[in-house]
Amino acid sequence: MTLANSPEQSVSSAELPDGSDQSIESFVRSHTGWMLSLAKRILRDDSDAEDAVQTAFANIFKNLQAFDGRSTAKTWMHRIVVNQALMTLRKRRPQSEEEIDELLPVFDANGCRIEDDWANPETPEGLLQRTQTRSHVARLIDALPDSHRIVLILRDIEELSTADVAEQLNITEANVKVRLHRARAALKKLLEPLMRGDAL
Image (cartoon, rainbow, N blue to C red; front, side, top):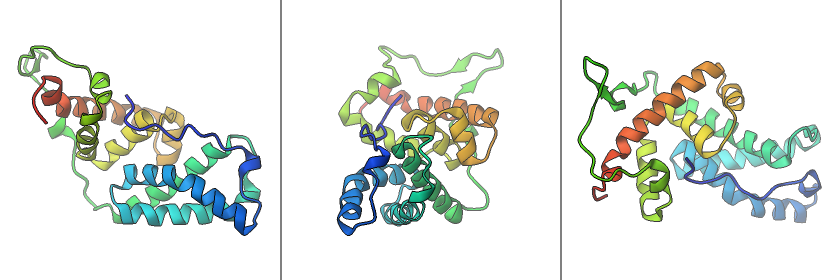
């Protein structure tokens, strides 16, 4: 399931700025767009996203010499933006986080899911191909608790591996899989009115 892909543009180490004002300006202009989009998906706030991207650029420039080429430069930059956005999110997150249980499907005593009858159900993947529904789907993703929303974004939208998400969130891979499963189930339930063909 993909709402918005990570930037297709690959960045080679040769394209990293050489320290001159011109190369830095060109570099910032080339990458600000996708970095802002990524930060906004995580933070859901334009001002916070802009601050996070500014700090991410500062970290990129500060650590250019530390880039060892073991990954692509884009992957390295992507990680820096995600880390900065997560740091910003942790600073503002309330102490007690909303549970996801109330968003999950409900089952009866026999283990059968309780749900309305559907006439012509549509898959979540099909919905995401319809441009007019994307902003609504994004709002539904935003309704998920942060601990599950971030995992869903990093795995299903940014397409990071389970291991990478676990490392960036400092949780186990098993925990990533559990949160992702629950986030997908909750999102599917939130999507059901659209999947039944109800109006937005």
